[in-house]
Length: 165
Image (cartoon, rainbow, N blue to C red; front, side, top):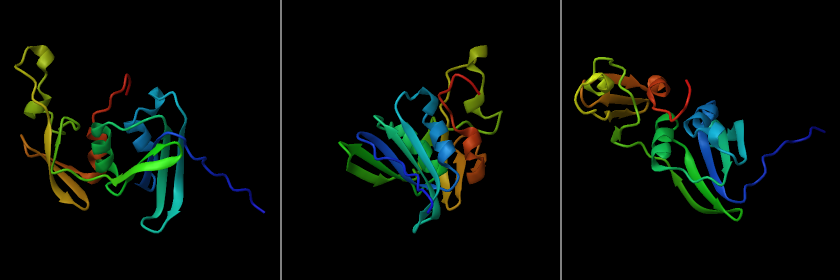
């Protein structure tokens, strides 16, 4: 008989469920998992009625920031966020694609006004803004230069709060 390895329940924290298959590591990267000192668990290719296969991420003692949820929605719009207290789900919701994403994506157009080098003496920085043009597959458009970002390119343009990469 095969032994089954299961991920234990968490006492307090966040469970991100219904992550698209194979996107769990990217979700961990978005959340700066290397800077989290508490227990982090990830399961990949878990059977799912909704998705066929899915990934799941559990993080002890962490509540997600709205910006983190918005980034997750771009990577895996089917994801659900479960907040856990004393081993019980106290809040559960599905992430939602926004009509506009502000300040979380870099425009792929190097000549876009949002990419001007302000450290070289140019005027005030302009925060990037992308409009949702299509939900499936996700398609975004820069509000300034109108450059598109296709769903499979999104991870390349998400701003990460990292000390490296």
